[in-house]
Length: 228
Image 1: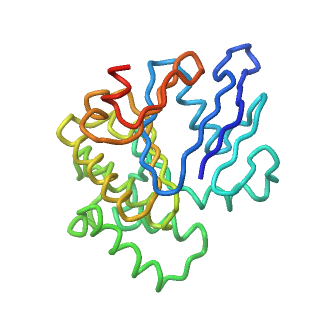
Image 2: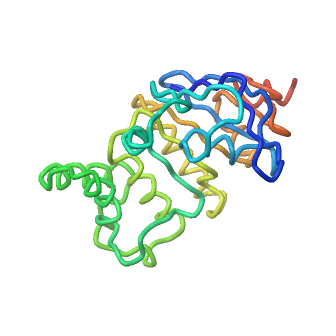
């Protein structure tokens, strides 16, 4: 699903964000990516989304070689991903239903399919009763669930969650990760970037730790990383 081979990234201002990073994520895995502020996590995400390209090395995601992908292929590639961000990125003038449906409408999915798919995904994240509400009528946790539903509505094989619990309280954070866990059990590969070590420790998933742009640990779970 994901393969980084000797990847380095140096920005035009001279900032060295990643240094000779090699890692892979297989289909069906749930992986936490952790590291302090400035470790290179954001650049890692930007390379995954093909918002940036590596200075050196090879990035492959979902069968695409992102070093060689043509510009016209990038939208198609991104449709193979589901992405959830810290700041929700919902459209305030749209209802919950329309925020989720928007992800299908922009790819010209038939109206009949939208009417079937959106209620199903809203049910999956526990928001079927909130379909006609607007984002400002929801709690932070509910807004993140809408963002998660939008990310899932295209049924992507890979879900990337970039600090998805950063703007919600600890109890709701746990609910979001438990929901991601259930989504993973259904076959979706999940990569979650986070700085919340206590949250990571509650789940027995693989933990990749990055610091100063380099891979410093790749453990089966947080406990074994912490002990090492």
